[in-house]
Image (cartoon, rainbow, N blue to C red; front, side):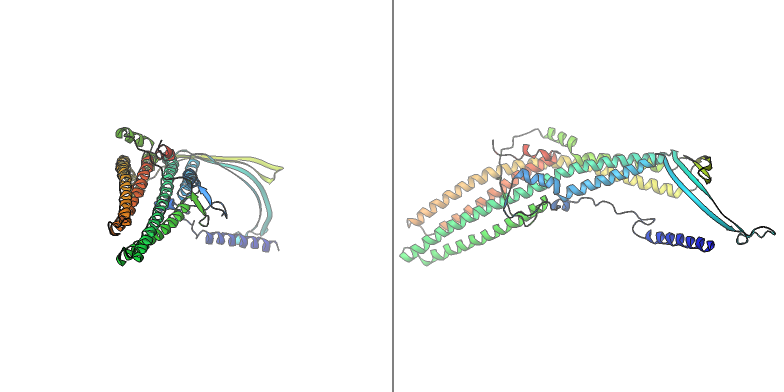
Length: 475
C-alpha cells in the first residue's frame, strides 16, 4: 500500500514536470523573450486613450485645455511612460546580478528503499529499508564577487533608463507640437468656414440684385446666370470647408483623448504677435543644451560604450562564492546545524568565436549610436534655423495677406457700386468676389503657418511646454 502511494506521488510529480515543459514552449520558452513595451512612433502621437464620459452639452475647449488633455491622454505619452518602466525593470534586473542572492528552503523528506531494485541482494538482510525521513531547514547564499561584465551591463542599463526618462520628457514636447498644430488647424478651418459663409451671403446679395435688374430690364440674362453660378460655387466651397472642419475636429479629439461623440467648441482665436529678431547662435546653443531627444542619444551612446566594455569583460575571470547554513535532523527538536561554503574562480578557455561575435555586435551598436548622435546634433541646428526661417516668411505673408484682404474688399465694394449704378455689368463683381475669397484663404493659411512655426521653434529649443512664450496674442 505504501509503495503504491509513493509511486502515485512520483507519477504526479512527473505529470507536473511535463506540464511545465509544455507551458515553456509558449512565448517565454528558452531562446525567446517576453514581449517588450511598444516604442512610440510618429503615428502614436496622433492617437490617444479616451478619457471621460460624453456630455450631452457642447463643452468649451481652450488652447491650454487641449494641451493639458494631450499631456495626460496622448498615446505617445503613454507609450513613452511604458518604455521608461521597462527600462527601469531592466536596470533592476542587471543590478540583481551584482548583489548576493539568498534563498530559504524547508524540506520534509520521507523515503523507503528497495535494496534488490538497487542491485543489492544481501543474505540475512532486510530487502526493504524504511520508511525513514528527516527535516532540513536551510538558507543558501550565492554571490558573484568579481564579475566585470555584469558590472558593465548594469551601468549600460542605468544609462538606458536615463535615456528612456529623457525620451519621455521629449515626448511631452512632441505632444505640445502635435496637439497645438491640431488646435490651430481647427481654428483655421473655422475662419475659412466664416469666410465662406460671408462669401455665400455676398453672392446671395449679388444674385438678388442681378435677378431684380434682369426683371426690370436693365441687365441681361447673362448677369443673372453669372451671379447664380458664383452663388452655387460659394455654396460648394462652404460645404467643403464645413466638412474639413468636422474632420479636423475629430483629429483633434483623437490626439487629446476626447470621446469622438463629444461636441465641443474652441474658445480661443488664432493668435498673432510679431516675433522679434533674436540671436540665432544663442538659440542654437539653447537647443543643444535643452533638447531631451539629443540628451537621450548621449545616454544611449554611453550605454553602448558600456556594453562594448561588457563584451570585452567576458574574457576576464569571475569570482563566485556559494554558502549554505541549515538545521537537519529527524525532527527540528532532534537536529544539528550544518554549513557548506565554496569559492570558485572561472574563466573562458574555448569561447573565442562567441567572444569575438559579442564584441563585434557591441562595437557595431556603438558605432551606430555615435553616428546617430552626430546626425542629431546637426538636426537640432537645422530645426532651429528652419523654424526661424518659417517664422520670418510667415510673418511677411501675414502682413501681405492682411493688405490683400483689405484691397480685395475695397475692390468688391467698388464693383458692387458700379454695377448698382449701371456703370458696368456684374463680371467685375464676380471677379472681385473670387479675389476676396482667395485673399481670405491666403490670410488664414499664412496665420496658421506663422503660429505652427512658433510651436516648431519651441519644440526645436526643447521648450515645448513653455509654448505660451512663443504662441501668444498681440500685446
